[in-house]
Length: 221
Image (tube, rainbow, N blue to C red):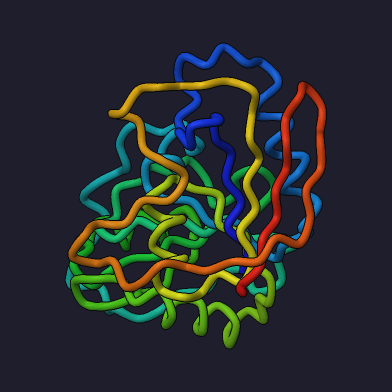
């Protein structure tokens, strides 16, 4: 698994206020080079991508079984949404040419599961109230044969996968600016009560890219 992030020189990862019209394209072009089977983002990022505001409620006519649900097993690529409570309002089961898979806890509502089924979205359960990311990755590998995944943010999702020891490679695209806003998250964030240990890495490549950016790639030491 690869964690691919983009940051300022001081490690901030929110693009808001950067005023760099090339940033998103540069990030996506470097991410595409990994040729991953699926890409992973957190709820906030996926909500932006989905373009929806509210999901349709009232579809559940009774309790919905908490069992993994796969609609598409042969997609070219998968968009994996880390959404424990079930809040992302998808308009369809495809985004950016990828079939959507929601990663949920069993605390999700029956209405949300019925809504996902109504628009053909796949979903998997990662735990009763907390996500076991290792379990999720193993389920995706066993059920769909996904061998290479790329985590693309936000910072808490990326930090969680690194903290769980599931990331083999860390890739950071550094752009030529200093953000300086301490309220903005770094590329990898983990709550103190969840932190396990530092992730020690070994530099495997560095490259100057367009617009005076630098692309660093590290693997587990």
